[in-house]
Length: 152
Length: 97
Image (cartoon, rainbow over the protein chains, first blue to last red):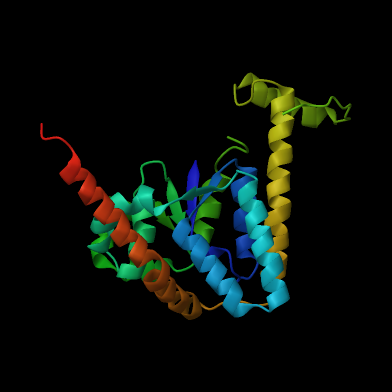
């Protein structure tokens, strides 16, 4: 199983700050492949550089690089999700369209975001498509994976 | 990659669970199962350090939205246009059927 992670689930929110730890643990425990995109990586980098001190940013970026070097996190590029961009652009705000396009890739099972309300629940057009089933909040993914066998 | 042989001690319960996975065909043998557990533990360790480091500074959804907007215009939009132009050139250059 492959799950696309939104930037929002990798940074702590003001409510439920421990949710992201539970989420990542559950993904790894259940043998799920975490997926990012070049766009999400660029966003992660921008948020780290803007929100943290130089020293914290240096360490955080090095850790991100080490995470990628394990080869256990898959990264989708614009060349892969680009063909779905036009369809995605017709369903959602432009800046979110590259994420929706990546979610449309046939090997992506789910997309997990802290912002499901904005991404899906406020978007009637998207709610009427098959893609809605793939968009989950962290508690939903955790619950879904609870039912799955470890390393299944 | 060259492998080294080491002796490790596991509880009966741990070994039973590993053997079950091998029997189910999820791993070809015990070694591969243990290597997979180690790989995942390494990844968890790295993620854990990243989460610890970023713990003290929560980012609101509004902040994340603003950054996404900037990254879209500065990084992704030019790439998407390039990728689409390349696809179009490819279509024009491909022989007619």
